[in-house]
Image 1: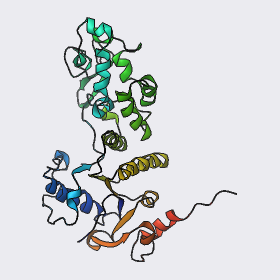
Image 2: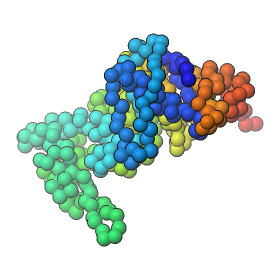
Image 3: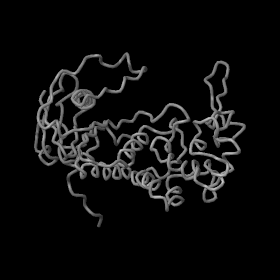
Image 4: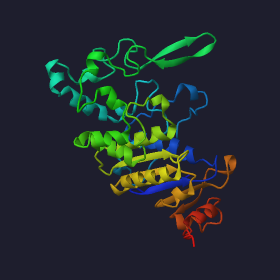
Length: 333
């Protein structure tokens, strides 16, 4: 198979389930670009090791491949596997929050540094739950369950750490805030607000800063990863790959996601998505339709072009559905 992906564009790869979209993008393309950049693809998870293909992708890249300096795969894998991992720590905004608490007069008087306000450091965290806010209860013949820590009651910290306040709130109070609430609370701190605004713009204003990674859905985890990328300085040399990013999202959240993906493209980056949602495909710059069928009947490029051009291809099974999404909506009488 020979396929061309335009740089600096928002490209969707479409086709029926099993036609080879993910094999092309999430395996072959990622393998070849990662090899070109000298990167090492993330190890396959143990649970999926037996099912994963061990064959190495055979192919080569041509064209302006040197224009790509970074490769980012934004998937729906969890941002962490334990209650220690949460929204605040993953995005990096918690580092600045801890510095604000360490700079208070009371913290300096007690010689508390920023590490004191990390629940991963022994000197500031609760000794019973070791900063997890929960304790595991083992049950006979049943899976273990988690319950709030009886000592800190879920705050994660010891009493001396909780005694330090910033603008009337303890560090545990901050972690219990939603993103929307934190935007108001940190309105005067540009560094913290930058991370919070990005999370809110992508539709995650309802999440708590300290919400455990184990409580997040795949779509939420993916948008948190995307938000983290959006906070970084864009240099226009990055390839972003997303496999079905709209799965499970409400249309309103899909619209917010598209705004952020287009921001990346406007900055000169390249975004490639594997997608079934025709409303999303209709807003892309370029479409690559794989198929025409599934399994042995797939694996070929049926059509490539703008969304309007794809609808004119009679061999494409995507075309009639995409055409419906391109039709102008009629306003109610």
